[in-house]
Length: 429
Image 1 (cartoon, rainbow, N blue to C red):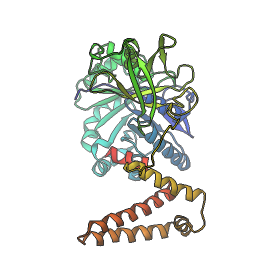
Image 2 (cartoon, one colour; image 1 turned 45 degrees about the horizontal axis):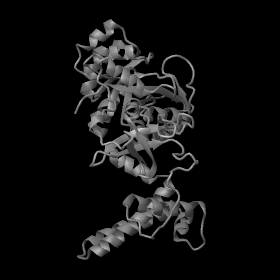
Image 3 (cartoon, rainbow, N blue to C red; image 1 turned 60 degrees about the horizontal axis):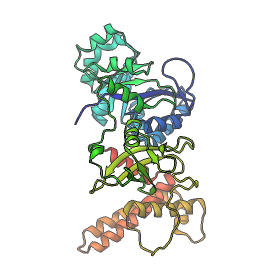
Image 4 (tube, rainbow, N blue to C red; image 1 turned 90 degrees about the vertical axis):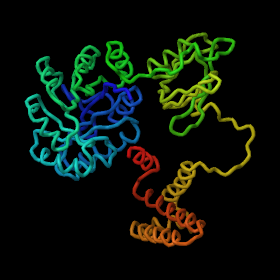
C-alpha cells in the first residue's frame, strides 16, 4: 500500500469553541461544523487539543470529541488534559484514533508505558512542545509512544536537519497552511504528515493536497483506475451517474458527466456534473450549499454507468426533498431483512416509547423501573442464551438472542448509545 503524507487540520477546544493552535482567538466556525467540513473536504486526520481548564469543560470537550469522531468520518488524534490513565481511556472511548501525552509534564511521561501496555503503542503519541525535547525521542519511543508530534509552529531548516538523524516517526506543526511550506516540511523521510492551522470552512484540504501532489509530495487524492477513454458514453458523449448516500445507500438522484466534469470531480472531491439543459458544468451545491462530497466512485460491468457514494449536505432534489425518488408509483409490502435496517427500526420504536410513553408498553415498564431493572433483565437474557446453546435445537438460541438484543437496545436508549456508535466502534477495531 502506497504511503501518503498526511494533511491534518488542527485546532484547540476550549469552552466548546474552536481555538487556533497558533495565534490568537477562536475560529469563525463552531467545533462540529469545522470538523465535519475538514473531514468532507479531504483531511487525512484531525488534531484536537483539549484546552479545558476545568473538569466540567473537560467533560464537555469529551462529548464534542465523541460527536466529531462519529460524524467527521476521519481519524481523530487528541489529548492535552491527561492527569491519569482514565483520561486516556476517555479520549479513546470517545472515538479517538490516538492520544498524545505532553512530554513537558513528568506525570505524562510516566504514563506512557502504562498507557501503551493497556491500549497499544499505536494509540499513544508524544507531544513535544519544542525542539529541545528532540534528544529524548528515543526514550519516549521505548516507553511506548509510536509517533512524536513537534508542537513548534514551522521549524527552521537547522531543526529539520536534526530530524534526519532520528529513527522515530514525526508529525510536524505549521501555522502556515500553504503548499510551499507544507511541501518543504513533508520532504523529510521522517515526517509522516503535518498538523496545520487551516483558515476555516473556506479552505479545502483536497485542494491543498492537489497542490502538494503537483509539488511531488505523495498525497492521497482521487485517481480513477479506469481512464475516461475506456468509458462507454451515450450519443451525447455523456455517462449517467447514479448517486447514493454513502451511509444508508439511499438513492438520491441521477445526473450526467462529461470528461471535464469527471476530472473536476476527481480534482475537488465535490460532485460536478454536466447540465444538459444549460450545456455547462454544474457543481452540485454551488448556489444552494447542498454539496455532495465524494466517498467513492464505481463503474458498472459495461463501463457505461457510474455509481457515486457521497456525503449529501442538505437536500439532493431541487424540490427540497432529500431524494429525487420520492414519488411511489407501485409498491408491494415486504419484510425488511437488512440487519442494520431492522436494528435501526426496532431501536427507533424503543426511542419513541422513551419520548412518548404508551400505556401497557413493556418498554416503558423497563424505563420506569430504571437501570437496575434493565440490567437485571439483560443478565437474565444472557443466561438464557447460555442455557439454550447447550440444547440441540438452534431455534432456542435464535429466540433468546433476539430477546437479549431487544433488552440491549433498551439499555442503549437509556444510556444514549446508538447503533451508529456501535458499528463505528466495531469498524475501528
